[in-house]
Image (cartoon, rainbow, N blue to C red; front, side, top):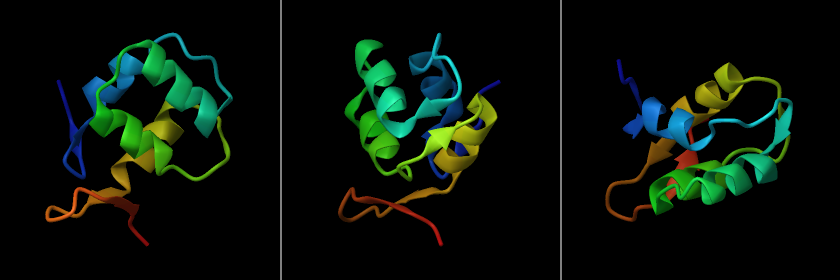
Length: 80
């Protein structure tokens, strides 16, 4: 089953982070997604994450769920 968080597919994110070892920094998440040929939408979403260590995939998915994409601009921001 695929869940959508803030308009983003968690299955897509999970697929592109397959094999990552936690804890992982934001930069490590982005690099893993790049290696896995993630689309620009996934890479931009990960770039918006706070600059910190993530302890688990569940923590990454929670951060991913807090993303909000402004439809007119394509700019992704973290919800307050």
